[in-house]
Image (cartoon, rainbow, N blue to C red; front, side, top):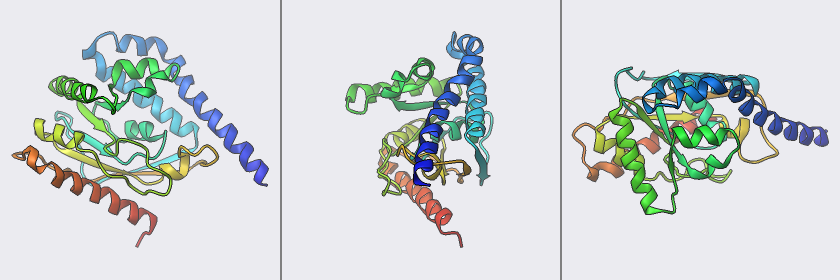
Length: 247
């Protein structure tokens, strides 16, 4: 029985990469056209949402999105969530309809096919480089001026399996304060169970996301960074506990 589980996990991981690549290959001409101009990004975003939904369905994930508040179409936001899985990118794209740009680690640009579009549409950051971190603010500023939103996983890493939620970095919150845009905390409840970074694990099933009430940054200053950072972390942490041990 254990042998069959390991065989399933190996095939399941292989299937995931097939599901990542196949929609990109099918939509390749449209994807190429959508990245020719930076102003065409909203069209790319719509294709990315189709790509993400195909993957989640193909992996057997039954998504459930709980919304305490809905983002307005004509506003920019800072979307944040806990980071536990390779499926976090897909679930974020399915959860949020407002066109946003990911701020993510530069290493993902090395993934064949996926990396080609990733490095041309996302804001890449080398967390070991202060210069790279500063460049993130400048690129994010340009994107916000175009009416887009930003998405950051504020833990800055994928925590070990035994850590429910790692400490949040300041970057997302400083950026939100600087541009006076609302922070939208999102809790991913099941991604670690469904498809964590542990190779021999995971499987089809429920995948829940909850969009919390927004945290406003209007009239806040950089001095308030730690307050809204911890407020955001507490919202996500408490929701993870509630999902794990429902009342």
